[in-house]
Amino acid sequence: MSNYQSDIDAVVKLRAEQGSAWGAISAESAARMKAQNRFKTGIDIAKYTAGIMRKDMADYDADSSQYTQSLGCWHGFIGQQKMLAIKKHHGTTDKRYLYLSGWMIAALRSEFGPLPDQSMHEKTSVPALIEELYTFLRQADARELGHLFHDLDDARAAGDEVKEKQVLNDIENYETHVVPIIADIDAGFGNEEATYLLAKAMIEAGACAIQVENQVSDAKQCGHQDGKVTVPHEDFLAKINAIRYAFLELGVDDGVIVARTDSLGAGLTQKIPVSTDAGDLAHKYNAFLETTEVASADDVNEGDVIIKQDGKLVKPVRLPNGLYKFKEDTGVERCVLDCITSLQNGADLLWIETEKPHVRQIGSMVDAIRQTIPNAKLVYNNSPSFNWTLNFRQQVFDAWAEAGKDVSAYDRDALMSIDYDDSELSLAADEKIQSFQADAAREAGIFHHLITLPTYHTAALSTDNLAKGYFGEEGMLAYVKGVQRKELREGIACVKHQDMAGSNMGDDHKEYFSGDQALKASGEDNTMNQFG
Figure 1 (tube, one colour):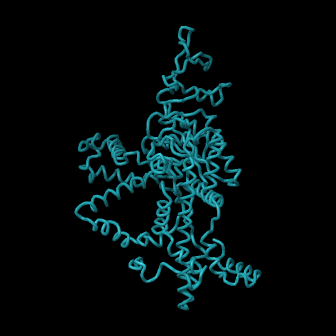
Figure 2: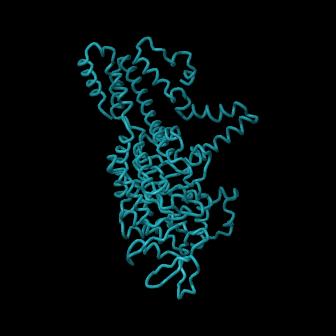
Figure 3: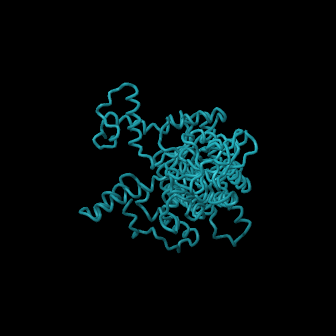
């Protein structure tokens, strides 16, 4: 924060210079408005939050217990409420970010209606949501600072100098709700120029960290669905370069690039890159292709593609759609190569999309990567696409069976049964779920844990519960008992929804601008007064 008293003094000086024409301007009111608008542009935000991420990455390198976390957002209000809740319950936003999910934009923010995660939504909706999220976070700052200013006025009116000093200290040391957003650019929505243009718009909106994946842009699939097609390393590195140039052009020199590989679940490629040397990246990529050896022209059909590989002529297996197959069981090796190559060519963090949450699986890949890049760090998707309950119950079952423990009381194929919910195995599985993030940060190099789609599911669950009761026998009690009373008991700021929407700040501004003649909304007839 800038110094509150210094800002007041600066306006006092300006007012004196302007003479009587500025006589109606209150120096303290102007300083308050300045404090409530700390970040003037998205670039200001991107620079500030990039610094936070770089510090947090260094903290993690020194101590793996210092990992970071985020939750996915599809609306500015959702992001605002997350950060308000974090400050309320934990006292600080330190090491807590927001994640902007391309899946949720496609499903919830496209003008086409709900779409699958295939980059069919409007790409302009990505920077638009970044800007929206930061608008709501800045408003949260302004609202909380507004409350502190009222506390300051009340302390002065009561002549309570101790309270006045305490509130001034709170104003001077106020911690902003503005935190880093890791933003999903999918596969770049086109070629490297398209990636650069979209990255620029995202950075201008405030993004300090951009996540890009190595799928084919026009054949992009959700990371947890089938049919994924990867691109050669040179194509992917061009997009990493494009994003770096966008950061540098806009002066965000320490912007963060998260390179995501979908190779673990991708068995196809659209393109065979040109290799000119046995040690180049194209040769390494092509070595994973499923091929058949060509002994003579009789082995070649009309339209077949033939390449020379390690001194032999081979024919890559091509599907009817023109795509080429990778060899079975090469996903891990391809992931490791993708990650090393990305970090060696401009990426800062990695994202390995996996099919299950398993510390040893992730850790074995990170161990291989760290043989070349010792400080390699991951961003990991703690995805709702995983059945966490089933996965961890099966992991415990398998570990117990391997250790010789009697598991005859459990049916491994039916471990989701409610009959097991209070069992020893299920309680052990829940303990592993609870410690998963700390374990994976320590043992698998995961710097940042995120949940991509949490509020998609929480919105559905809470709405289902309300609708069931309200349209059923509970009627209005379903809302009062299930929502409003809980807001009051748990101190949820939104119970005063007028204040949350900015009504009190508007009253403050009217008083600044119009003085005693201001028509304010917060009088005795405002029903929000019923909430204390």
